[in-house]
Image 1 (cartoon, rainbow, N blue to C red):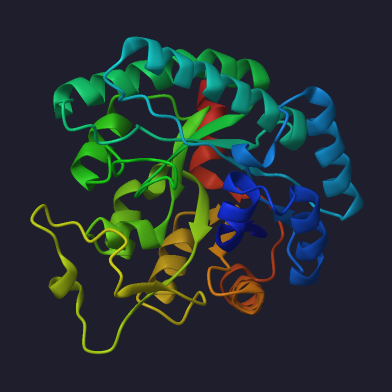
Image 2 (tube, rainbow, N blue to C red):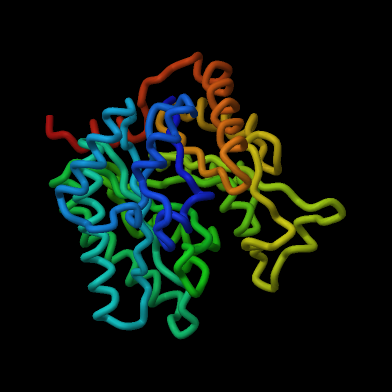
Length: 316
């Protein structure tokens, strides 16, 4: 298992306000002792190949791999032209992923926003159509599209269209490709969807190709049932806080048991730092200890179900 880090606490500074550069983040991350950095499409301010290459050089100089790219396409937008722009932007993110991460790197993909005027049937159809349309490019680039069980991108108006596990599974079932498409599992986002994070993992483990790790904490005197909305989701309720991985609501012993039994020994990216760099460092410490305990200290990147899918798809 290899460990990556993602600066969730700095997204506004790097992506929106642009008061911190990706180069500053790369230098800062040296102190974490992780193997790689998950990047975000918003870290690229000019979008040119020269900038991508400079970032690649900075990553290599700091001793980091770039295994995962965070992209947030909106394939359920009611306007056809807007959906086409989202597909084009996702294709550009995929090319950047391949340029920096090389073969096997993953680029996150989402369904889109839960636009009120878009019916579930229509949104499922659009999301499947868009992702299937991008799979030939993923094959050409030799990368993997990883759909995340997601809550809401920072720049979005509405929550994730496929936040509900039932909708997520419908999209997953509609895309049979297991070589260039899989799941990016986020346990805390399962909680925001109103699900048990370990039970959700069990339902998708055969397609998990990457994982984000974070944790959530309830304010004293609050229960998850107190926070549930009419549709059963919880979302980013004010009483549900970010914190150090392994100290919150996620049952990581159970999660790691499921991963190990399924042969998952891949990338786990820390999504933390909302409360400062010290918590991000503590989360990295937790994952290194977990690697020793659950993965025997392995720094391999082996995902048994994904390897089996690739072998099955290779002509004999």
